[in-house]
Length: 635
Image (cartoon, rainbow, N blue to C red):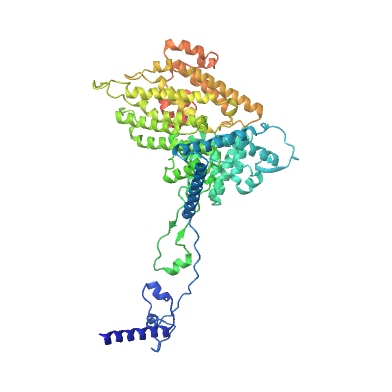
C-alpha cells in the first residue's frame, strides 16, 4: 500500500514539473476558447513548439493566447446607492428620535409620520403662496418694448420677436400658462437665448402660445410650427425631450377643434414615437442583449456590450411622459381618436418619485390628475362592451359604476386641500364622470319588479342618471367659478371638457320619457338656461378683457375669434333648448334668456328641427359637414 502511494506521488510530482517546464499558460488560446474546449499544452521535451497548443499543432493553425485586459473596478450600483441613502435616512431618524426622547418628547408614531407628510405639504403651499405674493404686476404684452428694435428671432415673415419681447413672453408663460398645464415647466434660470439655442421647437411653441398675433398670422404660425416639428423629428431624425415638450405645449393651447382633424393624430403619433425612442415608457433597469454566439468575430466587429444601463429619468422627463399620457387619454376617451398609452407600474413609480422629490407644488396636481385618468381609463376599457342601445342596465354594471365612483372619491379625499381646490382637476373629474355615465342614457332600464325581501331603493338606472345630472351641475358651476380673465390662459382641454359636458347635459334633459326617467323633473331642478346665459356672457367678457389687455386671442381655422364663436354657440344652443322643453316650461325659461339672441328664434323654426341624431353623431364625432344642413357647426 505504501509503495502504491509513493508511486502516485512520484507520478504527480513529475506531471507538475512537466507543466512548469511547459511554461505558464493562464488562458486558453483563441481557437480552443471559441470551441469551448480544454486547451492542452505539450510537455517540455516532447519535440513540439511551446508556443502552440496540442490542438493547434495537430490542425496546423496559428495559436494565439489573448492578452488578459485589466478589469475595471466596478462602482456601486444605483440600487445599492439608493439602499445606502435609505439606511442613512433611517439612522438619522433613529438618532433624532433618541434625541427627542432624551429631551422628553414622545417617540415617532404612525400619526406623527402622517403629520410630517402634512407638514411637508404645508411647506409647499406656503412656499407657493410666498412666490405668488412676490410676483410683479402683470406686463401688458401689447406695450412697446424699448430694446433698440432689433429683431432677434423670426419664425415667419409676419412673426418676428425682439430679445425683450421673447423674455417677456417666456416670463408670462411661466407665470400664467404653465401652472395650468404643469407637465412642461421652464426653469426661471433659463433665458430665451438658451432655450432658442437648445430647444428651438419648444421655444417657438411657447412664443406662439403667448404672443398676441393677428388672425392670419396665427394660422400661418400654426402651420409653420407643425412643419418645424416634423422637420426636426422626421427630417433630421432628432430624438430630444424638447421636441416632445413642444408637441405637448402646441396641443395644450391649440383650439380643441384641432382634435377632430388628423393634425392632432399625427402630432400625437410623433409624440408617441419620441416616448418610445427616448425610452421614457420603461424603468431604468438593465436591458440585456442576446447571448453571445460562436460568431465572435462579428460580435467584436459590431462591439455590442452585454448590458446597457439607462440612467434614471429626470423630473422633466417624468412630467413629459405623464403629460403625453394625459393628452392621449383625453383624445382617446373624449374624441375617440387613437389609443391612450397603457398604464404600467413604471408610471406609478414616476408619480411616487415626483411626490417624494417635492420639487414643485404643481407635481401634486399632476399626480392627482393622471391617477384619476388611470381609474377612468381602466373602467371605460372594461365597460366598453356594455355600451349600446340594445344593452339593458344590469346590477353588475351598476356595481361597477359605483365602485369607480367610490374609488375616485377616496382618491380625492387623500389629496391636500390645494389640489382638491384646483378647478382644472374638478372639470376633468366631472367630465369623466359624465363620460362614464353617458352610455347609460341609451340603455334600456332593467326589471322594475322589486323583491319584497328587502326595502326597495331608487331604481339603479334612475340613480345613475341622476348622478350624471349632479355631475353636470358641478361641471358648469366649476366652469363659471373661473374668472373671465383666466380663460385666456386656460388650456384648450378645459373648453373641450365643458363642450363634452354640454352635449351630455342636453341629452339628459331632452331624452324621451322612459319608465324610470322623466326629463321634466330633471329640468325643473336644473336651470340649464341660466347656465348657458351666464357662460355666454363669460365668453364675451373674456374676449373683451383679452382685447383690452393685449393678450392672445385664439382664432379658429375660419379666422373667427374663439371666445366670440363660443358665445354665439351658447346662444344658439340656448334657443334650441328652449324650443324643446315642455310648453308650460317654455315661458318661464324663455324669460330667463330674455335678450339673448332673440332674433335667432325668429329666423329659424327651432321646434321643427330634430337634433337627436346630430347629438349622437357629435358624441361619436363624425364628420362635422353632416350638420351643415341644420346650421350646426362643430362645437
